[in-house]
Image 1 (cartoon, rainbow, N blue to C red):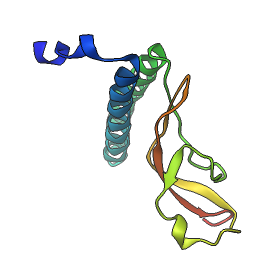
Image 2: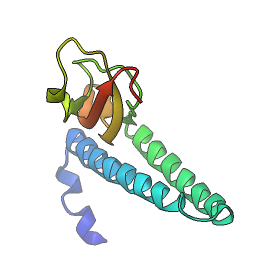
Image 3: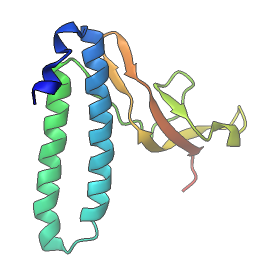
Amino acid sequence: MHFLAEGLDTMTSGDFQTVLADLAVESWRFANEYRRLVSRMDANEQTRFIGKLNYFARRVESCLAQADLKLVDLKGQSYDMGMAADVLNLDEYSPGDELVIEQMLEPPIIGPSGIVRTGKALVKRAGCK
């Protein structure tokens, strides 16, 4: 794994946070896909695999916390123009519509100085199922 260490000595803390944020987002995507697969298993198998998934998620959060980063899930929150997520379907709605985050495609990663990586989301009208 020596190739991974190459360049680490020249990375700034901002570069390191960006790389860690990218890895965290990919881990989040993997965990969501894994959760979908596990939901298709019978109940006995689900328990074992969900436990492994929960452990993985806690480890990712712990590693992010050590770097002073936090993965934020905005799902279900009222949409605000200043949110740390780009909304991909915003053009489907009028400016006066009350919107909520329906689905996170990528979570934002927040650091001590603000947004390290902007998330991606889909919205829906508030009150719609």
